[in-house]
Length: 120
Image 1: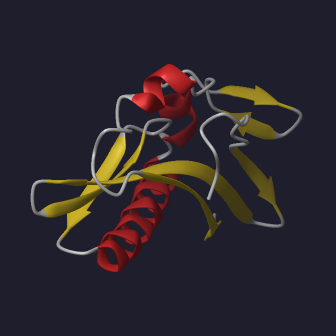
Image 2: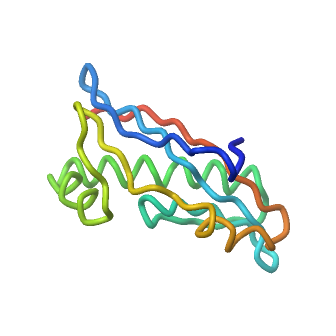
Image 3: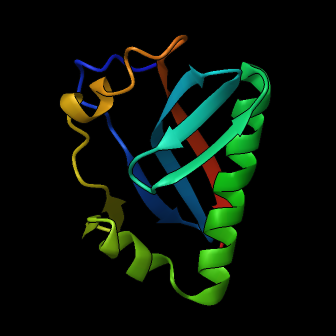
């Protein structure tokens, strides 16, 4: 898990026909549901327990990348969300501590790095 005071290293790298995706995901409980939210992709999901929301988010992330790659819209969408391309890596806009702090008052707030390999 990452600490909100540290620089959060996020990236998308394309190597050998795969995308290696490392993103920071905010996990928190809202009412009776656990929520996983990735600000860099504006992607979220929810479930009734923490382990299930982690699994569901990984599935959602996989679907997001497979579908945007299939449609040919991934690069355009990343640029729309403020990502930049540097030396064959897409880098997201900086995640500010202030932005992430909006979730700190939720029960079970946590940050984790999600690493996924996606064939492309």
